[in-house]
Amino acid sequence: SQKIEQNSEALNIQEGKTATLTCNYTNYSPAYLQWYRQDPGRGPVFLLLIRENEKEKRKERLKVTFDTTLKQSLFHITASQPADSATYLCAPNWGDTGFQKLVFGTGTRLLVSP
Amino acid sequence: GAGVSQSPRYKVAKRGQDVALRCDPISGHVSLFWYQQALGQGPEFLTYFQNEAQLDKSGLPSDRFFAERPEGSVSTLKIQRTQQEDSAVYLCASQPSGVSYNEQFFGPGTRLTVL
Image: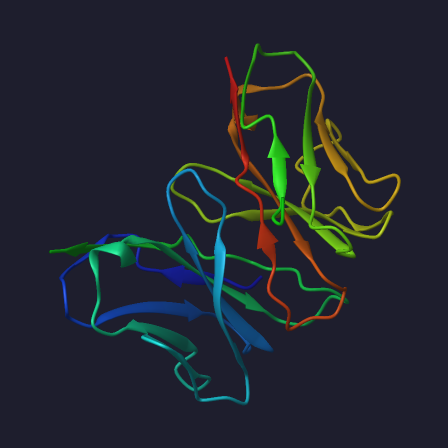
């Protein structure tokens, strides 16, 4: 079965720096991959989606890359702010069901210090 | 409200009790999902509805778990004879259609604690 790996250790960075979070998967590439943000006590909130044939996607200070050779997606937050502190979840979808069955990684907690 | 709502937000049950968790999706959303999230883990898929039809229930952990969406809007997740391992946050999400490449909109979750 497919396995998704995100760094379970928290990532601590200084305000203004770029945060880079990693999502690795096994076996064959997903049709697309989504990234979500989750704050304590809340449900995940959608951030970005990148398809298998896309190398990079941007939205404001966010950037997602998708490398099917490395079987990896990287999520970048530039000019990070304390408000960016949250857990970030990657969710690949292999498209092998007729609907969007998300399989989430464990998430990486990001802490941005002022 | 404009978002997905869930009730109750917190539920404490004694082992062996039955519980019912409610999800109100965004109006008009065709697809509805239930996920279970254990502490420190990502959400895990439980079941999926397209309108009133339950198309996938492969993630339900046991036959004690039952979900329904009789009129294609509100959904209820029922857990019978709760066990301590059922303690988790139960998340509901909805999606405008059954087509992929759409984001899912999540509710705040119901935190279930089984004593």
